[in-house]
Image (cartoon, rainbow, N blue to C red; front, side):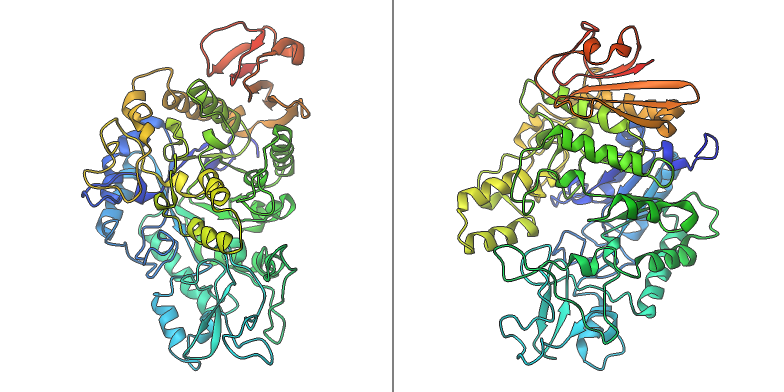
Length: 568
């Protein structure tokens, strides 16, 4: 990918907005499009190129908007289509692009397509979703009568009985999120038509939710296969039947031809793909294949998981290096990486991968940012990450709102797990950690709303907020500005090759980036222990400091949570 011919997004930085928690403009306690319009100066100041907007479509909000009931409108909770048009125009005027969240593995059970599908076994849209009778010889509703033994991502079986017809419908997520049947060409064409409608409206691309689950492994007779049993459960894992299924490349190539091919606009397509391997990602992101520009993979955010995300393991830095290094090497010649620590589904990075103690919070937030942004790939900044926002101090079950967390609590406690231990895991890993309102200032609700926020503001906002950081050159926000500017200024950051150094070191994460005779050495101390830099990396002696996260110190010593970008 030589300089000059590389796609625009190789040097871009994407900012994700989770709209209900970004900024409320009307005092109802829920963020909205009007609030985003009020805060665009923040994005301009930061220097980002793309705004990725989590769902704002009409929705019953069973899963905070990832259960869509109308793909071609805006939920009144968030505003109106006119405001969305205003946002597109305002972003374009500032040189930024808008990427919408595309959720087409499933709809809401309130979507007209599903209501029609559910109305009768003879409905013309019955085959738009996955309907199946009970398991052979069993009565509908009997324990174990579900068509397969798959466990859903939100706990419990993936099948919900429809009493009226005596059949079950498939939902990989919540029971109110029935899966669309992509085997039906009418479904695919309806989705492509909707996507073209948004692009014609001025949207610049899509982040595609769990898009590698749209192809299910279905036998010729329509049979779906049981998965291997899960430890301690009556259910099994259906991963082999729906993660990167047999027609996934065919479907994505068809989507590319039908929706994106031939458009003059500089668009962006990002596939969120749980369980995707490096080898599969090369295929998905190979430009010659015409599928997606980049994928979100989850390997690095699964390294601290045991049997599930709620089974916590300590993270070993050498495991993170091995994972990142494998992805950097695997997509070096073909394909492209998405780089992220945080998003709306992950706990806050400074609490998870860094050190959110008062002493090291600022330093670890800037160190982690440097580490990530200097890799090869397109970095994603999740709202509040640029302020060093941390996990919320949940006191009790009443503080949680996330459907995944609450479902897990019910299931785990009913299975006999210690309620205190279940709650402790939820404090660490709940998606609600990422969803607390953005901390704009030190006022009672952090400048997020004049009303009562839908989810409590983190009490640390009095100290950690945008207003306090905006004019502070040593702040987390100021460091993010410098990192983003560096990617725009130096082609080696966007396009240089990547070489991992010190792969077995537990505390120091180091690598080089090289392009056209320029080499950057990136050194990050991800611990509370100081290290002798020149003994670890003699080539660092005398190197020019391009960017650092700490004030001047001994050039031969790497202080706790210090990050340096050096020009060799």
